[in-house]
Length: 214
Image (cartoon, rainbow, N blue to C red; front, side, top):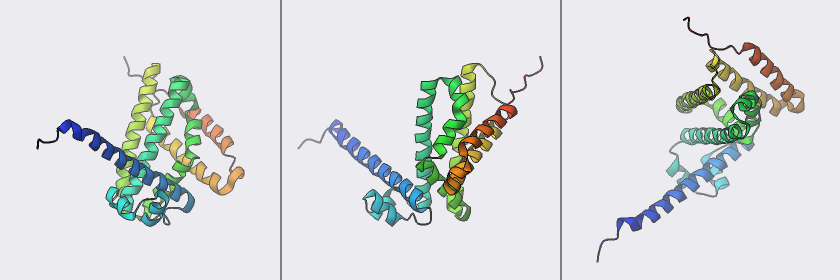
């Protein structure tokens, strides 16, 4: 009997890869829902398995530890947020996008996936493995974010603020904190007013990069 042509195996391998990717996505989505509803400590492999309608063994196949699963959630949320932001930028144009960026970020921080990420970040304080792995992930996210922002300014022919990295960190921390405050205080947190005030502060703080002496 002749050997099966290699080309005939490719569709099967693609189907298997698609199934693995779909299962992984279901696990991550279920983890986000569990984190949002129940918090980090209650989000166990058993609970996620039930929510994703898979076995605990399947989760362990994709993620060796809970920390690995949480880092995967962090990465997936970032990539989805980045996709959404790119769509908004394409729709608004780069200049309008930069003007609206604080409000766009705040809107994202209020959503279920971002609240789930907050649970993960807070849990890292008491989990050395999670803390170490998240630190690497956050550094990579910041690197990509700053590079993207510099590209936006370059597209407009404008020098980015000299303190762009600091402003970005302050903005993310501020909006993340406001999202948490809204969970606790509800309308009393006056989030929209806070955001507008933060925007005013950033406008005052924003300074073009100093030009080199000729």
